[in-house]
Amino acid sequence: APICDWAERKSSSKVQSPETAAQWCRFGMMGGGKTLTGRDMSEKECYRSALRLDSKSAQAWLLLAAEGGATVNGKDYDKKACLEKALTYGPTSQSWVSLGLAGGGVVDGEE
Image (cartoon, rainbow, N blue to C red):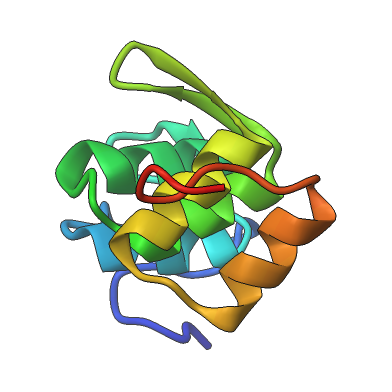
């Protein structure tokens, strides 16, 4: 059974396209899958789609960091840069710990 009305696990052919950044994040956390248009989306692609809709989504930046980073809106972000963005838009203890484990970084102009 689907955990959301717009998506099911990859094994199902009944998947609708998420419409918000939060929905894209949830779709990615479920492992991605096919959209209504038939496009197979990986977890990383789901998080990139979330950021195209809301470039200030701390959750999407944190999830993208867990995937090692990616190119978003034409700019390359590695894991550390994604974590810095996540902390800029919504600091959480998980983001701070992850940035520390990644070797630290710069948030709001401070190391």
